[in-house]
Image (cartoon, rainbow, N blue to C red; front, side, top):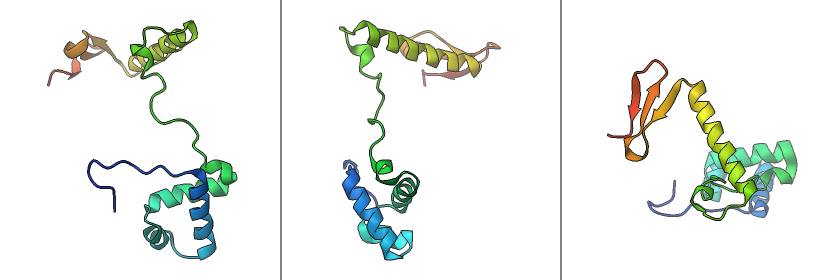
Length: 127
């Protein structure tokens, strides 16, 4: 099963998820067989069922918007001060993570080289 190449992923509303999970729990059929009958993956049915049993109907609501919240901020020229500060903090958190893992970046753009703290190059973006 799966979507055709180039197709879009289906977005399920919380009401649709709740209906499918409710019918599954009432059916007494195995997850794999029921998921095939509904046309969804077994993993998706398992995730929805687990969230429903742990948190109720609220667990099936979308928790956060998809994607990176800061992706569009760095291209915007008219950021508010708060947005600019949030972007700066996010960039610093990424840099701290790099340093904790023992490497830093030299160069920029297409000439980036990731260098370990011992000085040996571990990855280059010029491939």
